[in-house]
Amino acid sequence: MKLRFKPNSVRLRLNRDEVTKFTKTGEIAETIEFPGRAVFRYGLRVSSGAVPEATRIESGELMLSVPGADAKAWAGRDGEIGLYYEQKLDGGGALRIMIEKDFQCIDGPAEEIDPAGYPNPLAATGCKPGEEK
Image 1 (cartoon, rainbow, N blue to C red):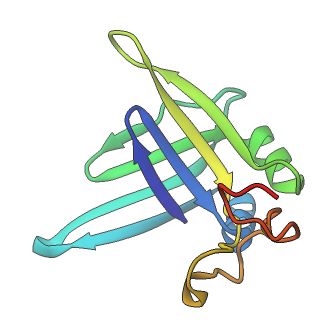
Image 2: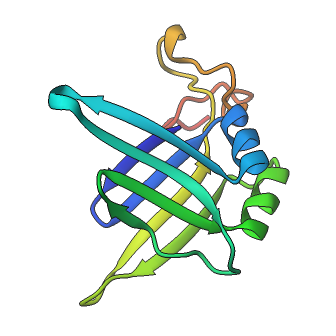
């Protein structure tokens, strides 16, 4: 599972195996260890409600929650790339939350190609991201 931050946004990308695990267990998480015994854990879980629960970060853990119905529908539709939400922030503004299926890389080194990645729709066109055919 890949994690990406940008100002006021967080994105998780899951390959096919990770999506399958998430839909079967209701949660998926990864841990990053840093020097000095520091640990950062991040993940995704199914919430019990019909709307996304608050994204939270505490005690070195970032956990995103999505409604079970959304997760099930997303996992079952090949053409549906992601789930997208906004969470209101205290004092105004919003945090953008993106959970997406991770496509196979078509322009990187062979060792970076994830065999469990979703087939990249650009692979059939012969285009690389940012190119036009």
